[in-house]
Image (cartoon, rainbow, N blue to C red; front, top):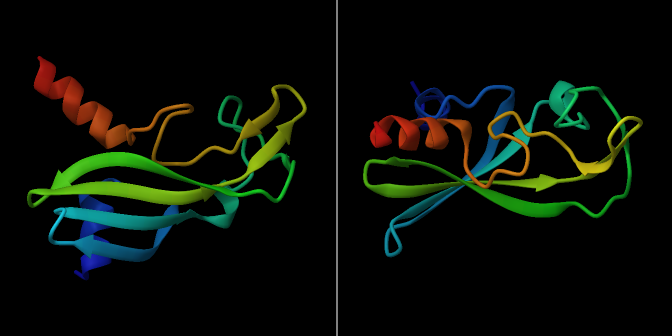
Length: 116
């Protein structure tokens, strides 16, 4: 199993590829640059419908993911805005996080489990 395969498996990354990873030993962080599969791009985060692009101003966003061997993990991806006929102009869906969340689904599940 390669490093990327291990990270995808341990962080439940589905429908996306890791385009780059950058580790910083001093800050003890790992930044994973992700790109959703083409079939997942330009989808409304509310209804899931495929939509047309609204503009070309892709904004880089980050999501906190569960730690990996003591290192803080961040998912980083460019998010485009789309125009959904039903929900208007909105940031496209990403497969690893809920709409308007700055945390991955696995991070939220880990925190919820720890709170029990």
